[in-house]
Image (cartoon, rainbow over all chains, first blue to last red; front, side, top):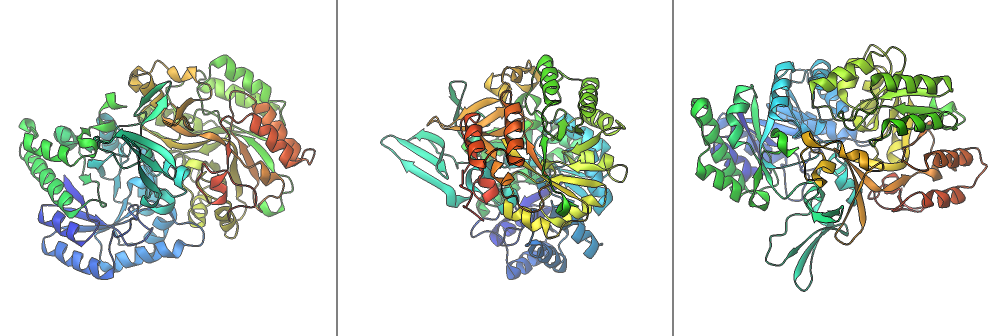
Length: 331
Length: 306
């Protein structure tokens, strides 16, 4: 089971490589990837340095070009594909059919992975991308139970990568417009969810309010932790209750079910978080490396170490974790 | 070809909510005599909803076809289970009605075999994608709801021959799908014990901010805009290339909405007058921001935005 780690910048890439990543994934400094944040991602020189560091340690480098071009700007995505191919990326992580069509035609030898942003949740959808574009691996959205992932692995023509740790999209990725509904910019059109330029923190006498483009996402007491105002983690009123109507601030953590993921034949575990710090990447990579190694050595007797669990919890949103959709009851 | 079509057609989208069987029967009987040209039928949100089975959908489709409507069967947007693929296969093999593919699973089943319509949740964001799908049998596409008028115009400059274009023009915008059922969550039960509680909310369940701003609609595993998206103005001075305007059903006033759109289309009613009437059916208000390249929830006058 391969460990795929996020690298939002060169220090994070080094942190991931040095702590045991089998592969890292990166993006260019523009809207061609789904972490289009100020100060993040790689330019030409940084990619060369990153690639060289990764090569030295035998770590693969994947390039995410996983947003959707629109009429008039397709060449920017073409250029990203060409650059990644010329750099010698080990794989491209793509979502858009047009971009895949371009990549498969121009670089037939280049390994393509299908991004979670492409929203393939069934083996028929996966078969489409495998047959049409020769896609070699698919990253599946965080909407499937363990049993459903197992069925997918059994029926898919190509290997499956799943999310193992990090921020939790509760909506099926690639088809969530909540951010663009509120701000005009979302993952598919801009490469970011709830862009920081629309976020406002306002203090009242005793409360702290978080807003996204004016919409109140949450209001907490000053001694509470105010989370980043992603819409799906806000508190709202439904049927008279004020509650986390969609999901609480929490992170996905699969340490307890690693043996299940291994047994059903998952090919790779992905850590979310290119927007996180190098320290975060180092710590999470280290824990996941140790856990996967332990699980693969002796899956029958594997138990997640308490120290790993508390480390991951302390790095999680709202200092809590969930198994998300992997666990049927969560749904 | 879209460029030579003289009259914009009106379509009725699939019912996004869970309605009881009798209501579904009455609703589609009432649609037979409306001036809507195309009817999309079928469950697109949750496979657990079963007030209509396959046979019922086909019967409704046949009646509407006899009434002169072009009938299309719409498929589930989020597919998670093999049982859902089984039902999808049955729909795709129906042998009579065109399919609206709302997920690539359906495209895989139809590509190269029979022509199909690409729904708004297929992620067709650029002409190269559209051309690729057209080569596999797509004959009409519905633009993703978050895209604008200028993006639509950009598509028209690079359209594959013979492909029709449809835009979502009235109703609550489908914004997201999830494994989790939020209606069940509001009832404090997991999805597997949902007891079909969404049947109690024929227009979905309102989610408001803590300032009581009506914000989103919870509809089972789907999340919608609370405001109703309206492109009625497009009937007045349409962007070149729109072949079909889609009206998404609500539990009330859908017949009146169709009638208003039809009257504007045939120049029997002014746009402003129609819009004022539509406003009275649109609690908590209308929006059109996406069309003007703004936040989707925004409401722009006709001269705002690109």
